[in-house]
Image (cartoon, rainbow, N blue to C red; front, side, top):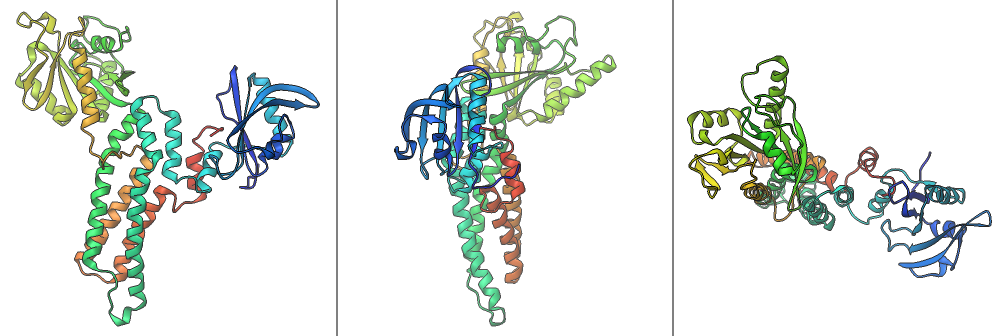
Length: 459
């Protein structure tokens, strides 16, 4: 189906299926006229924006449904076009029929993300904020919700815009120098340009550093439970989830494959991953399981390394930790089965061990699990480098920032080498391009189609 910005588009804005109500959204210059043609009630054209009206949807002279119509007149709407939302009863038949009637009157079915795409194209917000709309809809935790809200509010966008405008000013001066190449004039102060580039790099690097955790918060922070067979990994998983999710047995090597479950701690979702015990494999299947365990360990944001309480502080344990290749701040050493220790009275929560956080627990008796949860939460919230309160969670943004940083570093090298203006202008142009790609100041139809195709139909 051909599409045009002048089209009036319609879609179901609530999830499909039978429910108490369903909302149909329609946007475009002709949306009020189209809805009025099937609506019996007040004259919508003469009503004020942001008002709600009761009436009936008519189908061939017969009442199809009682509805409430919410009116948003341009430019004071989500898309900055005339927008109407029709609240119907949640019958699939009614919703399908109302949409069909609107199409018959001149609307067309919206494509995925087309309402938000129109909002972007009409200047309602930039591309970063548009993508945050999708993240907000998909957020499943308080932390993911906050991340999306912060980006929708535009802090990241304002930072990008300020940096880009400053670079554009210098780029213009350098381009002007090129027009006077034979006269050996300098309009752009090299020292001021160097200071600006260093300042932008100092803003970009913390944002790039924040991506790993920002993306993890968005999708769930990977936390791997690893250790030798019978260290208590599956028991701990079950205790944290409050359900018998993993098989627990005295037989070593019971867990052969990874088990993944989500745990919400104070609004942050952690993706717990129980793994096969780490030892010399006894058979081919166990070897595959151990290989998968090591892969998960490498990709984890945090590692819970479980060990029997009697092994705490041993050289062998420290060597095992070093072989896993994780930095100490990414590892929590969990001393398990403390209830079986003759010397433990249940009060000790921590042990010291060469730079590692070490927590004493009894998963079977659920002792100090709250301490473990609080420590995970603290690590996630407080050990994330970022620029102020701004974190990025979008891989597209990270890659564009990475390319921007490389271009600016190239510009710095050219500055230090005293190269001519044309060689200085080129990396600055590249940096401006990549900054513009993030916000949508520079965009292509293919890029927009890719981004908005991931949205739901009614958004």
